[in-house]
Image (cartoon, rainbow over all chains, first blue to last red; front, side, top):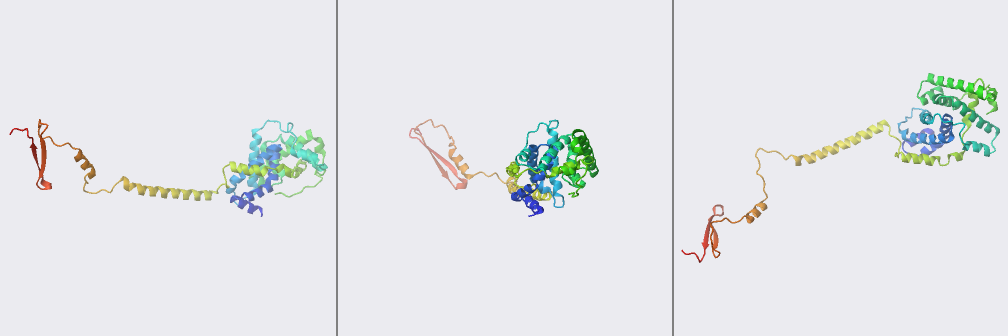
Length: 193
Length: 149
């Protein structure tokens, strides 16, 4: 059953089809929420809300549109709302060890996985300097790899605004890397992936 | 989705995206999702919707058919109630109908007319109806042995 069938059946009220759709999309929804929020547990809670909201609004989704744009618009909106509610709280420094960190530590993780954990920590620290919209634009465009057009649809803003946000975010991150993590600024991408 | 791959040996200093793109691969393990679908399903149930929201077209269709059914029900109710509330008018005013049984009871309960004060405990009064029922005349006969004629 392809994605269109799953969407169609879900629109007709088929919870089993919706469950499959959730399984297929949950990682991406979680990743986006996590990069915007910087907290795994919050991101998981937001992911739940995203799929509940998706079920409630799926009847309004038309087949001609982009399902990813529809889904991640919900993801981004709920994540930004959540981030704004708890703005000002120190998330990165105070956060507890998480399941992902534990899994990496216990599972005899490879060097590259450990490196990803480090990169995650660096990103959370530097991305705290970005506005929620800049952060969302950067995550969707530069990390998840959506096109500028798709991101503009997800964020409900013009493509030129998306480009501006991404550019500003990139500059802030670059500056932060130079100042706070010079060892990363000098590294090459082949070393971490 | 964009599918362009940059050179592996790109200087991170010139483009931090190269460093952070690795985060796309950081998916949680399967056990992280245990109970997730259960919570989503419970949330769906709690939200009070057994089915996804209706499309505007479906909502309009449902709304209009509900409206139509309501209108038909109101019309039927009006047609049923109106004849009772407003009886058909006629040129001749009808007499007020009084149930006959009520009249009979009133006649039975009415006291007999007082003809005269007899002043005698032994006097007897006999009433005779004389003539046709439509034109009857009462003849009253008073008998008392103590009367001195």
